[in-house]
Image 1 (spheres, rainbow, N blue to C red):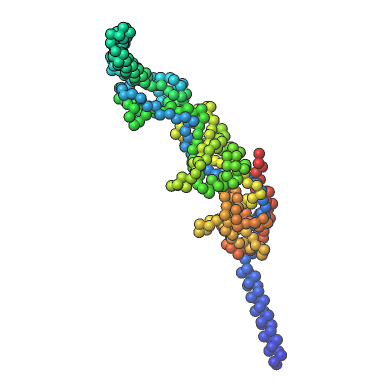
Image 2 (image 1 turned 180 degrees about the vertical axis):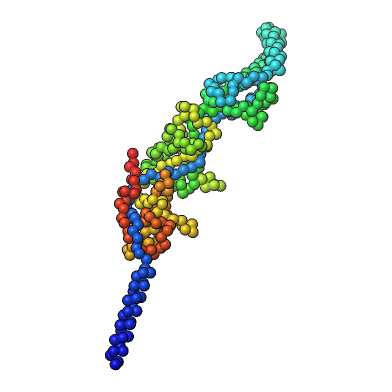
Length: 370
């Protein structure tokens, strides 16, 4: 009787265990197939971007050297001018009258010298009187030359070849050498300078990746830079970085940088703005698609598959590759890690999957250095 009772209990227990196993099997998630990529290394080019302002190779403020009213304006805004070309003419009526009076004083002084010279030779008067007359003549000539110079300064000429900027004054305006606003600005735009700033870290990154031994050698061997215009278009000519400031700005901690661009077509003008792109070629770095990452609490995460084929979130540090397609991974991932290409943002951590491995080269297109 006891044996029969024990058998009934054993059968019931086995039946219950079987049911529990079936129920557990029903509740266990089914591992679904998802594409993953096994990481490797490749090459790419990064583009560091900096806001820039453009100026002509020479920008000269045109100012009046003498006081006067603007009598004539010979140029218009945006006009190309040559060195020595007259731009403005100031009224010279008063100066002309002063010149006539000064010339008369020169004549009078000259007559006095001519009168006294023979008297000195005959010892009729002392040499002191003649020397005084000669000094008066020299003073009169100097005053006369000053008036003539003032008249010549009334014709205001361009000191360089270039393009006329804004002309804020009109005919009849009174100007002087103390007028705060210049008459205009002439810009030599055959070559343009692009000025921008980099912080200390950026300056070190640029220099540490540049070829060459000395600082100047590195500047000379730096790759050409791009200029993105304010309309989003890339300027057709490449530029060259020419100078870095000798020390960081004590207030901002930044270095001033100057790049130059050819402007034979005259498309660029002083005052234009844009963006400088400095390329940095990287070899043997890990790249991942940007779509394989998610942001969570100010951290960027990549989803990888662990040894048990379960999803795992890994914090990573990256730099964006131009084009918005890839990231360069600086830390957090290693070669041979398997990164999810599908289900990112949908699969919670710990989810088991069936990895479908896609070749690295089928996803990541390497960049060949020219």
